[in-house]
Length: 432
Image (cartoon, rainbow, N blue to C red; front, side, top):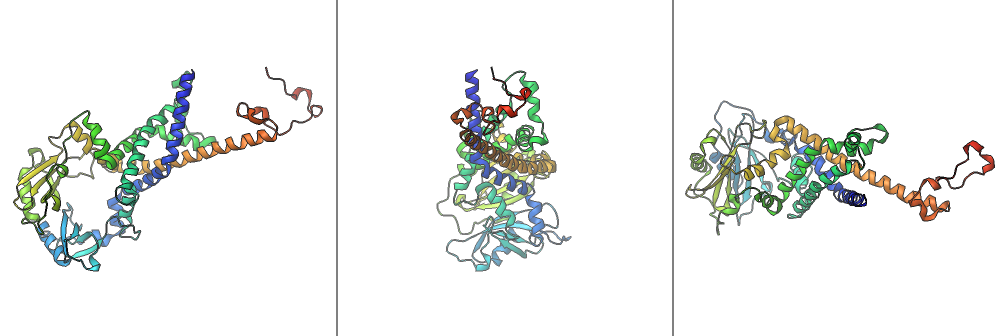
């Protein structure tokens, strides 16, 4: 009926304009997302001098000793993160920040420092996410481009968050538009799932979106979380299940952080380990971060194989006072509510890590598909626009005027041939 037709026209207009408004952003996000699905491997391949070391039989230095050696090599800086590799032959990644009032040397203007775990020797540095496309900075550059477009402040994060919301809604609108108007709908709908060479671009746009619809919706929803977690995603989840504030937001801020905490990284790890729940006692220490604003160490423990093997999502984080070792807060998979687990699953889903290597391959393919769907959508719109513009022009040249909008067949030629030159059997009949 007219009502259904009006709804469909409105849906088509919404799909068209949302697609045009988000096409460039989704194409960039899709292609960069395909690359960072294999971020660790590509980064290590591009920069083996930063990531790989000769494996030794000797025991690696402790996190606290590594932090001390980095700070000795980089005067005026303080280590804020130490990672703990779980495989021999890999460097330790640390992050550093300038101590207030100190001026780091010009060669130490980077915030990522890679260290040999066996002797504490600095292997190299880089500024993570800097707008530089050299070999050392390429993958961090792509990663930051993916979620913020390198726009200043949070503007890029918010912009792509708005794009993610629009994309989520458009997933449902686009799927609705593929359903035929007339019965038998389900039988006719099968055509929408097939690709014909005669109209490759249109069918790839429609059928590709249908076949990959669950995956595209998952990427869209998880994108909302990654860019607008506190503003949009978590408040919506709280409608259905409790989600506690993270310790980073819940803990009190320290007015004047100590220049050097009393505990070092080794003491922080020792203070945090006894507070693991029973289900997480077998987890390995993955990283230790110093958070000056909280006056605390944040110690992360991961289930073995997390981020590499399928369905390995267990984690636990313990916050301890940086001066006393007193436990301040904790968060993790075990003991979490359904809402908190749903929130925690968003990054493993978005990156494909939830399903291991096959999942990451699928995410890489999906990223390329997102770009293809965005580009084909724009191409389809340009072709239709070209037809809408050119057909009325031909109509005016043939003297048909505005009536061309209702019947293009009536003005398919600029001038009709003389009836005397047309055989009787081929003369056009008057339409009834």
